[in-house]
Length: 306
Image 1 (tube, rainbow, N blue to C red):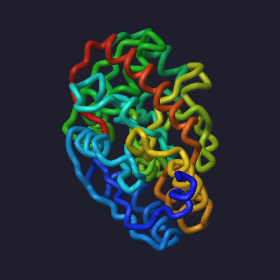
Image 2 (tube, one colour):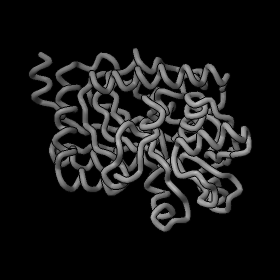
Image 3 (cartoon, rainbow, N blue to C red):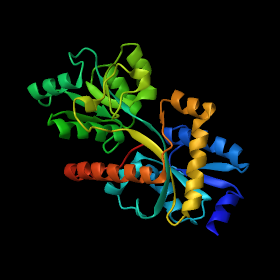
């Protein structure tokens, strides 16, 4: 019966709920994929923005939806962080069927260029020689850039002062002015400052170097195993038939190989992935283990991510 159902899927519009506002990274990726799927399926894939509580409002809505493939949610890596920051009305693993990790984007590790720090090795040496002298900015306690820096501090044993801002834009302004000396920041937003020389990118937070910035090393080249990338993927409610999940994943993969979708996502500053459900499930579990350990060690109850 499920095989027949998969053959007929989708026979009506599909809704793709996004837990963040229009124009953000999660929304950008969702709309690029949904447009192509609508063409491929000859059925509307309707993006619904239900922003709030770091995406968990939208995620809870889908957790409680029918497991028939017609209600999906696009989540960010906040999905693996918020369970350790607030009480949720769903289980982030048991209540969902992972479909596919669509795209990811690392952060730049940026330095105010007046400082004699040109590598992660330099940063660690400087911070150990002068503990607490360097300050880092972030878009708020508990956000992805903040957690990336806390992970770096924990992995290297350095001391840094945290200066939280209400958003990334003000943090960038103060970094450009030298009021804070370093931060992790989104590559699509900050690339112009790096290419103009106003900020120095000493590393990227992904496991591998980026093609577009091949001369910028990874943090992991100095701190083995370091990975603090942001990612975006699609979940279905738990119990959605595997045939439906695999059909959606296969069609997403096909959509991601088309030049218009692939180029749009890459030009927006993301790496295209499109992996299989089990691979996405592994990413979720590994991230939950990593951020769970970090947040518990920090005693963090603060909210926030993309």
